[in-house]
Image (tube, rainbow, N blue to C red; front, side):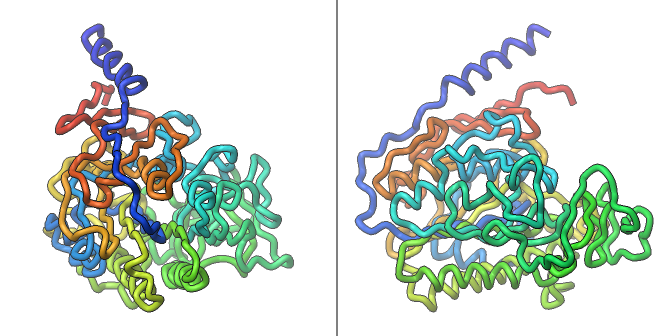
Length: 452
């Protein structure tokens, strides 16, 4: 036991006391501060982006970003699951410092302290209009959430001027969008109710009525049915507000395009958070069957198309050269994540994790080592970089970009690496999965000998 305890205590000391900024840049930020567009995918692996040459699926629009920008070979999320990575991206704080930064149920309260200096607050203070469109999964409201009233606190209370988000995840109830703190399209005559402990009387579930399902669960995901898919959690009512899975990407894309068009004359920060290829994978008929890899591959093609359309919107508005685009994913890939959707049987020779070990939920590299691309035509030269970069560092890097000071001791200023002016990023990074930590320094990683 002592042989295990000593290295663990040593690494713990490094984690809490040894993290110092790797590069104190003396360079001045660019003379023009750009619009910033973060495109964030969900469960997308290195091998799922064909520009990395590690899988068989072709993603021409992701590759367009890669060919016009800087491809990072050592880009990281902070966590091998969703909520913690998103927490770190928006706060610049390691998620393991917040015990609530875990994968959340659909009725969880907001886990970001509204007094924190968040990424959108930082951008607002620099004169940017801020927006989020897509997946949120950081909790909404307080402990007694009422979906039929104003839902606060939420994205608007942590710095976003505009928000159009999924209430939770696409596999959790409620399956509705929330726009500016209200459930979008909700009728007062048909209120929405959500419960994560008990079903509502008379409401069917996937467990009791599998014959009603067009996509069957492999484990869990057998509670309330909506659009032929059973989810986690129970809900009742709100029929006017329920989304149709096949149309979700089109809806989110239109909202993001409208935000860009409305703010084309002002600096903007947009966090465009797509949900692909997270389960349930129910792509629009335009993409169904097109990948040859089943719904998971089709969902990635759908996201690839949406990214291309958003880039086209920048072109049409004359904003391409004025916009820093950052493309990444919240964690690594997973195949069967709760639904029988042929993700395993139709995988063929495709390797979503590329040449890495592990995936979502894992401390091995593919759990947090994710696609990571930056593009800013005229400022960032196309190419590749071996700098160690993390989404944790957006806060301090954007502070440097806009001439501000960072409030976070975890987030580091790696702006020069993000812009391709330096091959030096950060020296070390702490990653986590379900509260278990690992440590990366230079070319090495240490995973303590956790049981199992």
